[in-house]
Image 1 (spheres, one colour):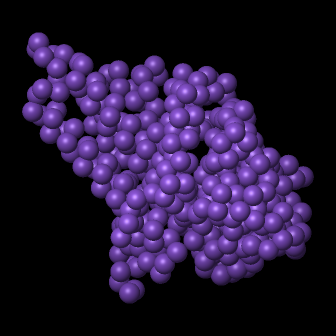
Image 2: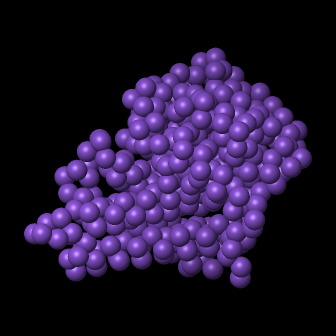
Length: 371
């Protein structure tokens, strides 16, 4: 099997890498975090207009680059290297991914706005009681009225649309009776409580109280299989982001070990530190391999199993590499002034995003037993 990127994919990676290295420096990112908005609109428009990155996984008929999951993987890894705050995951991977699956007039109408940077989508699926279970829903859509609460909705404060899961029938944890909605974020009777996550991105608690929803807002009336497919695609993309984060954590720690002196020589000369750095490198490489395999299997019957294997591996790697990076740096590893602590925060969040290690090991076991 050929694991090499195409010329176009390599150009996409190199172009985004150069832009982020020149423009999205750690200091520039910290200025955005201190501003309290959780994103930089100018950067988002640069992604759209200057780089064309937002069109990477979309068909040329919609104005995109004609790519797919591999392009998302390339983009997300580079964004992980710079711990980018902007909502590529929720807008392009999740929102755009759902629209690609649904197709038709709604996709034709909304996807060009995503590519142009004018449409931003927040994924309102998680609920306080639901943990990682997509079918555990108390938000309801009955008689055309949406009621309920969604928790930790990243990017809702600056979204133009909300991608919402809601129960139209059945019991709280039933697989049936779940709809997927795309509604305007400024619709009447939607309220939010906004805050910043630990790594500086914007998130919100979103409340729906008798929000009017029309048939034109319903992407799919029996949507659990669609939602599961989109979340698997998002999980693979998050694994790619984690690979970028972990590569920087390892490289930064290696450089620090070469420079920091103790007892008259660099700490990297001590065998115990060398072993730790090698173990970190192995965790990163295994995470990269598992992420690539999961991405390649997104369009196959092995999708869910491959994604859970990758996420379990990436979750373990995020914990191991992040903790060891901080330990080798010592106390300065958790200061606000040093980038390594911020990468550690993102790695820690990714560890549990879309399912913890235990969740995905259990999910994989269930898939294997059912096979």
